[in-house]
Length: 465
Image (cartoon, rainbow, N blue to C red; front, top):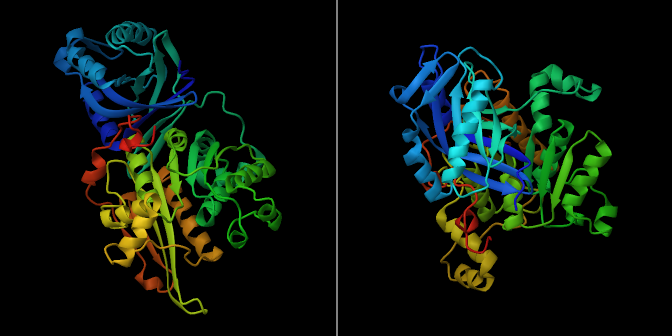
């Protein structure tokens, strides 16, 4: 039996805006809406993923006052039937026009009555949730289980051009001395947010090593590190904190991450996976992250992370470096790129980072290397780039740009809105050619995966159980 010790909620900025518009029509009275949610689960952590919002019509409410709302139960029958058919969870959203930042006794009675009915309909032990939206858009909530009212939600994330994280700050500890300058720069709220977040880093070598360092030094709460390889001699000039002793002992890159965090001693929990991204265990672990940094060169890896971000409503930051060198000291170009991907927006595919033909070639190279070699020789497919040149100073510039991009999303500090910085193309060899590109039309390929959560097969891929 699954134990749902920590329950989170994720929704898009569009759904957040829809909720605010319905729950605060301007009459000072409470209103209510229902969310239908996909789900994800891994080792005691669950996330409810909002797929659809159904505003309860004001006319269907039998009572609407400043501190109370009730509605006719038949309004929910169609929604409950759909939730049962598609194995979805229910989230109740309602407003507190007076700004009261707690669940009231009336709320307790309403939730008990509503969710007893919900569990009567749905043949599940999976969690549901009740959430309050305050006039300023802030959200807080609690899990509901088959046993009744549960604990506060671990975290609520709202993902759009900006990323908002809401969490219970009761009982927060004093800011430690080592975090003083972080607080001076970004405020105590941003520091405490970092302490609550679970960040995934996929690829712990070049740029990934530098992302890891920045996360650790900024007091990230939990870091899920993914990389299947060990430290090799060629890594020593680009993996921070690596030594020749690590090479000799064949230490895994993720083990190095964990040891580094322990030596730094700022309290980050590192969960290492010495495994390929295309692993069910890894996908489930990443599904409970609040942000993912992609530090991979492979097309199929990028595609999988973009897909995972859509399925689980996770903000995704992809970065890459390309150095065109002749191997004799001559350089034609040094380029880097940072992409911010919001679920429901444009994708790496729609931005032209790779094509379906590239994806087919990468998949063939992984699963059918002999056929790949034959088709490559025959000229039917374009070769996959391997063993590109790498310089730590270039990796540092691109990884720092990526980390600052995440900071800008959670703590907007730019003069222009974040939507103008969906793509950051950095041409180090010709700075005048660098450019920022704004968010474009939603990608139709990835839109159909939005908030699906755990499915069989996982991510729609046969072989991922």
